[in-house]
Amino acid sequence: MNRPAPSLLQPRKMPQQARSAATIEAIYTATIQVLLADGVGRLTTTRVAERAGVSVGTMYQYYPHKQALLFAVVERQLEAIIASMLTAAEGLEGSDLATLAEGLAIAWLDAKTADMVASRAIYGIAAEFDLGEVMGNAMKQMIEVIGRLLAAAPDARFTDIGSIAFMLATLLGGSVRVVMELEASQEHLSCLRRELPRVCQAYLAAAT
Amino acid sequence: MNRPAPSLLQPRKMPQQARSAATIEAIYTATIQVLLADGVGRLTTTRVAERAGVSVGTMYQYYPHKQALLFAVVERQLEAIIASMLTAAEGLEGSDLATLAEGLAIAWLDAKTADMVASRAIYGIAAEFDLGEVMGNAMKQMIEVIGRLLAAAPDARFTDIGSIAFMLATLLGGSVRVVMELEASQEHLSCLRRELPRVCQAYLAAAT
DNA sequence: CCAATATATGAAGGATCATTCAGGTTTGGA
DNA sequence: TCCAAACCTGAATGATCCTTCATATATTGG
Image (tube, rainbow over all chains, first blue to last red):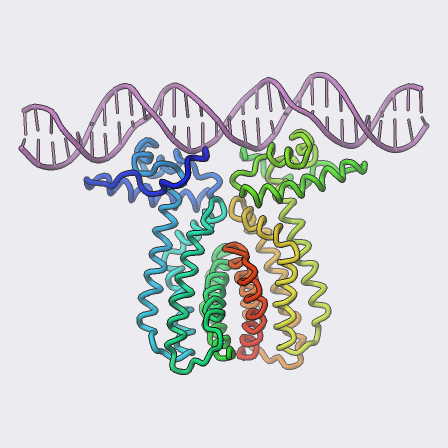
């Protein structure tokens, strides 16, 4: 990671033929596989290329440097998660607090576990390189969505919606992260799935 | 990080004179500083040594390799946190659920923010190298402590104490982590400090 | 079928780093 | 005072790794 000039995190060129699209896809998959098998610290451009079945040079045709590759992977995953949360939010608009709490928790768990492999991989990248901003953005979007839902709930009478939305987002994000990172055992996950909605419900019900 | 033979994570030799103790301390401090300033990815043995005001060779007198250094830092921090949680638990033994919930949340926040600098640094290490086990252990201890407290609460009537203790530990660990990692703004921290106890109280009150 | 364009290759360059070791300096006790 | 043990130094070593580029192959429109 020879400290390249910053920025320029976008793919270097857009694929125009079918095979290059396939190559990009292969690189994406390989990146995640390597990430999970070896961790960020041992993710090398060569290893990814090898696993993807292409040469290193090919990778550099699409990504100006390693960071860009990792960044792209993260971005793609975050977008997927946010998108699915937005759809879930649509279906929850106007629901009462209890429904909202459960709906949000379940939607979040579903979104995260849908591609748990990628999600776990991303947690690894976040530390390694400056993802604070990207993750912070995602968080901010989440808070906004939750805030809107809360405001639209018929039985809501909060003095400080912002704090509550922030707290909900934090709870969701944090708990899932801890469980997925430590040991994504089926047992723990199902416990989360059972208890997390109750936590949210209890919190919303108790919050003035 | 040339993949050294595993294990041997303990300091290579014990200090016998005063100056070596000072050296070790300097190395510890320097490690955390570098961790925060540059991130795990850019933490090099030379950089740490330089910042500590010693030579690289000196570092290797006490730690067989870089991993050992990082491991020691993590271990020290985790021990401090667990210790302060144990003391807090002593004072909470036999309390009712509401007191328990608040006490645990506050104790956790205090322990984490007491040396926030180190805590944040450690989150960075965790991903980079195989800390799943160490962190998992700490988590297990937390769950046990919480479980004991819950069992001793006079107004507790839970069917599954294990799940609830697990959930509480997850909530505490996750939420603090998210806030500290994303942006440890004073505003967010004080929001956490205000809301996290309420979350725990509400959850415990609602759980059967 | 033939350019022109897109895509792929992988050896080599150049940097960075973890780790060692041969030889210094300091300390504490006899 | 003197020496053995403790402690420190930092250039050198050997790996690893990111990135480039000259060259080769594939695709497509004309």
